[in-house]
Length: 281
Image 1: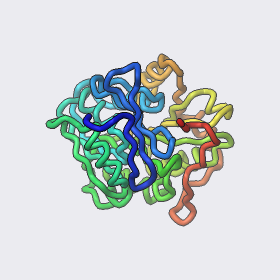
Image 2: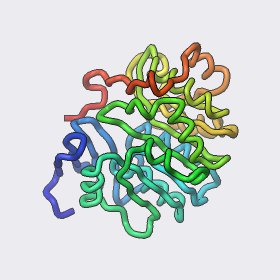
Image 3: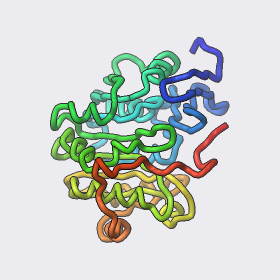
Image 4: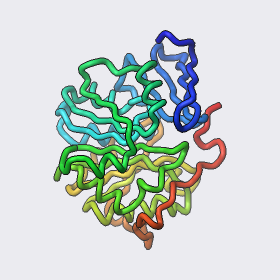
């Protein structure tokens, strides 16, 4: 990097800051308006610092045999943590990253560029508009990690959006989403109900403390048309520094309860995190 550190820039949707990690020589934390967005270690792209990112990584590791190249569509770019991870763990993968913030894309391209030959293509576009225009059956994995500030945008929460996401996936494909909520989980339950109308198999990965309603936190939604290897996921997530639980089947249906699927006309963003939940000065 040629710029002074830390790096701060005005981007389309706020103020982005890249802060170096004093413990890792070429590792960086990206925040937008103080909310953590990404952590990336340029020398060790398989290092996943954020717990929710580790859980997404566990799913990516178990959806296909190790090392097999995949076509992955990322909604939300950040500092490209997961695209770098897939490029390192599944060489030859083709990846498209859709990011609505052109200024953020430019900042990451300038400060934390992706090496050539990694198969990662960056696109400035709205996530839903992109998947609605994308070719059917063109992706093995679709990862949605889109936040406007600290909230999932409303137009990425409805049954119409879920159907568009399903259409892009191949028959054996898997949809992953990073969501955030707290008890009584109106948003999270509605999202599970929404995706259950489109996909046959649903699982949820989250810390027990979050699921018990003790605090606001991230939850990873996993959806597909084929049975998921929940046993392998449970083993991996239980071994993390902050262990998580994998909910599926009857227990997850009980959690969803009477929540209704979300229609476009009723869609709302995910809840605003309580003060201090994710913020960094």
